[in-house]
View 1 (tube, rainbow, N blue to C red):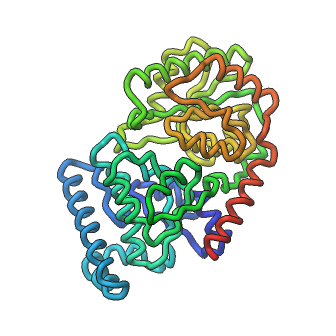
View 2 (cartoon, rainbow, N blue to C red; view 1 turned 30 degrees about the vertical axis):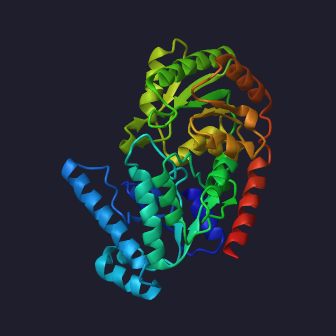
Length: 378
């Protein structure tokens, strides 16, 4: 989100406001981003009663925006102003709704994919209220259900879809109404003072609870945990300090990266640290001062590369190979459910010795992103 803010301001935006379902106002305020409530309530939080109310409100929002879209721009906007005045209060003084979020447009294991549903209805509702949308590069897919595919097409009807890798480009091509553009992940655009940090002999292993993914089962996740125990042990034998960490907790998927870090830590028999600080400024500084990062979350790898640190990706979805493959780093991407610990340790040794491929790479990607968005704006 901070990279999105930086890109939008470089493209001429006077200010950027984030509509979020999380209570993260304090975190973003420190970076000059105002945070407002979500325009469509997210149902999977709160007590059972609160979730029911939020679900009803979400259904009302979707029915309302569908009906309004059939009335023509002026009449539909007037109807929305009467039926959903809170949307206009939230979007006051907004001239463009920006679609961001990275990986919401996929099919999950759950029959009711609330993350997808809320995101897609919000896009159409935002367009109906404001009249202009701009999409940041993200993933579309894997889309395995026809209803999800139809909802994605419907939500992006008035938007130029922008995807961050070719798999998503192929997925969007199967949706006849979409004409997607492929652009590097916007997170590469973020420039951080952390890149000037002095590099230490550290390997940071950034873990993730990916059991919500369609690619996961309990046996695969157990193998992942044990493989990272083996990798951390081997990395320590190379003479590198091992630091375990994570990025976030997502309650609706019942996942917490730091719980996984502690699970691995409990099995390790070599010296190591568990870094529980997930503040974005801290992570940039930490990655810049690290010899090599092993990241399960894609954005751990992106943040590392953006400050000149080589990254090895453990992908739970194909988006990682697509995003990093655009940078010529496809051989540093491994399937999270088929980790070859010995190969991973050899790659850590190689990239730690050479810090290969990252010199100047982030700046070249930033130039590509800025150029692409000048064309999209035009």
